[in-house]
Length: 333
Image (cartoon, rainbow, N blue to C red; front, side, top):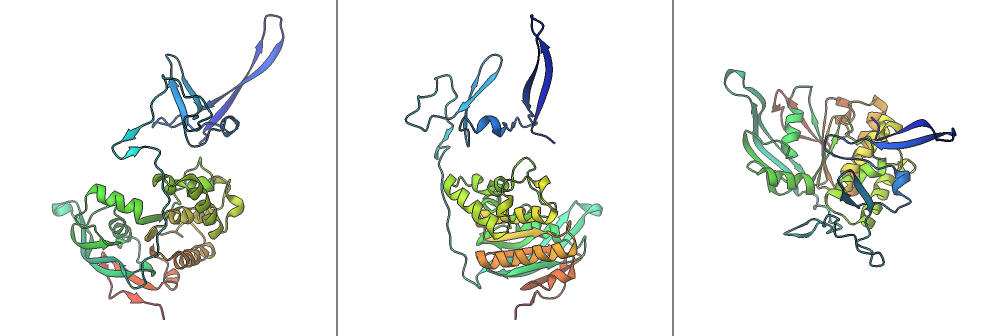
């Protein structure tokens, strides 16, 4: 997919002089999003916000000068800045928090069940799953395809709710949580790494990593510093401006890990993060995950069906047909 395209055509004036003109078009998606060419926005200082003005036959786009006291106020026809009961939409913040003390429980699941469908067609994906994960642990959820790993991860991460059972994640009761409460958990406490990387193709590595910080309205200087730090942590300092299609599979997963950690979550959830990688690259990614989890003081729950990756875990939770096979095994000497 492309964000813009340049169309050229030849013209001839009244005097018979031929010339070639070029017009650049931006692609607008179904949600109305348009990516403006950087060559046009950079000279005008357009960065985080632009001013829009609607006319009968076009939409005008200007740099946002409203925050610069030396610049004139925008015309009255320009749309007003959105506000809410909580204050202006431009409120920014920077979040720094200490990791939980080692030994504190981050995930506590008790007799979790999940049933899809009803009656004779009902499928029991989880059948009374019980386990705990302490702060700072690198836990691996090991099991074959179809054992219920992804279902369990979705419930722990607040993407789904159990049919029955008790669940606490980062001190929050998720078993009966509302949609808004589970959204808050995903925003503030949990980060995800997916098998398919899940990067936005039109954004650079640095821009992808900065997404969680934009969601939490982190101020620009703190956001850019955190992005630089995470690029350094995953060893991609020199690839900040590269887009996903310019990176290898292993590099894309490193960007995904950096993006997940940028917002300083309490819990990192990874669903088969090495599924699209060769064995050697997969081992490197798991070692990187484990190293970053320790250095950042996080807790991780990683699903895999690769037994060799389970050897790198502090705790192994073996899932078979929706049940935990035996007790969770603590592998940390």
